[in-house]
Amino acid sequence: MKQMWSPWRSSYVETLKHTDKKCVFCEIDKLNQDEKTFVISRQEFNYVVLNIFPYNNGHLLVVPYEHVDDTTILSEDVLNEAMRLIQYSIKALRNVFSADGFNIGMNLGSAAGAGIAEHVHFHIVPRWKGDTNFMPVLSGNKVISQDLKTTFDKIKPEFEKFFE
Image (cartoon, rainbow, N blue to C red; front, side):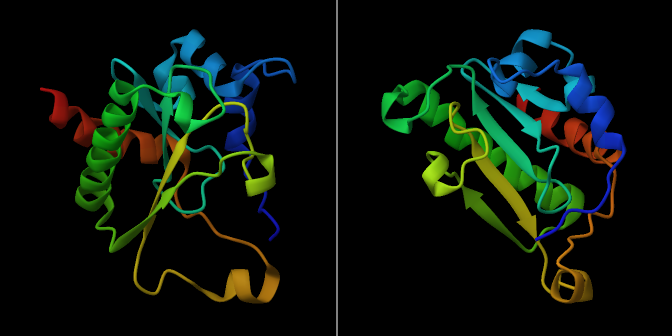
């Protein structure tokens, strides 16, 4: 599938100063510039961030702070918190975007399609009935109808309600 030109992404990617030797998820954590990097929530073992290459509006990632490439290495505390954050993500996305369903999962290893195989992360992709249109079918392009900053501004306050 082809991607459509999205100029707002370049300013975000440039803030990470990403090189092949640095992990983008570790860099997001180290920068501690949540609004620039679209970090929705930071908890003890994981953080929630908008995917800058979303499959749909509101595509979130739950990312452990620990830099590992396999879930079997993660502690129960990390995994339990990650699952709670997935639950909160679902609730927030339902409240903000009225999502009808969700694709939730991960790609473990590059052979499984992981774009960032060196750092485990979980995807939460909101879905809606009838959310397909002619663009993917005819041109192989997916249209994302909302910029990341607007999505961030809508989801973050909803997410913060869980931690008041």
